[in-house]
Length: 389
Image (cartoon, rainbow, N blue to C red):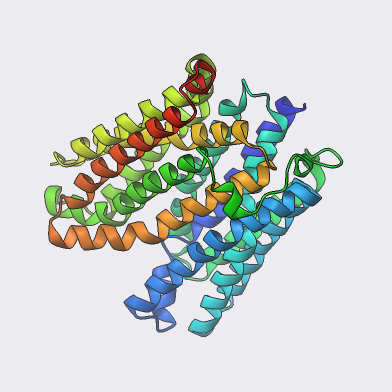
């Protein structure tokens, strides 16, 4: 196992992938509007990418089990680069849709393959640490990407797309020349071949649905907090940018430095439950936001809790896997995407009923997730090994 060398490389890969992805976030709505997109079409444009991720992440995960992690990762990163350059040169709205659909299809290879790579190179004891490092890279990429996109958008609206494309090309070359294949000949596809539906049978399927509820609650918060903070505390876009940056740093620090230690000492199960409880407390505190300071602190508390959950769930699922790691991480990414598709419109509907409803529902969704984990533990007979896992 070359985990000491490979983990920093994977951190760099996911950081630059997410920087490229994050660069276009603040620009895409304005760029789409310039090409004639209505608010409904903009929503469909955003959803099309997540939908392709939902459908194809398990497919790419299974492919990586068969042919190796590196080639699939390269396809995903190159696909992302192509989609960015395609968007940069778009002159009509259909071109933007085509680029997002192609990008969603190909880039859905990235996250499950990287997580499967981590599972390949880490022992059970260090699995949580490895997944946390990948999570930290994703979080930091999302922090720096939008800031870079905002800066370059002042030159022109399509400039951030060219920058994102170049970032992805550099990452592709980095993977090509520096990263070694982690999957031995025969791979862990040889363990047991399962369809997606077979993977959703048995107690382990509960963990996927638990992650769906976590993803739903997060997506609802992300979609509505800007309106909530403006109404409750009079905060503008600049303050919100700083608040989300602080939250992102808090989550990244927890994932990069704390998840590994906690899972090693207490096991993934306890860390997942702690994360869910802290997230629920964060949602409750958000209802009390009345200025910049309280918004930054309370959102960071939520970010810390949320940062504990996903790496621990990824670690636990790969440990319990009886099929290839890629199949497991691909299916988990699919459930994440489903939450990100349903969460924003659900959050919007709840916000229109009452400004605090998305966060009250966040508490409820967190409690459901906690209940599902307890059901999982009971169904696995609550052995000491499972409890620590």
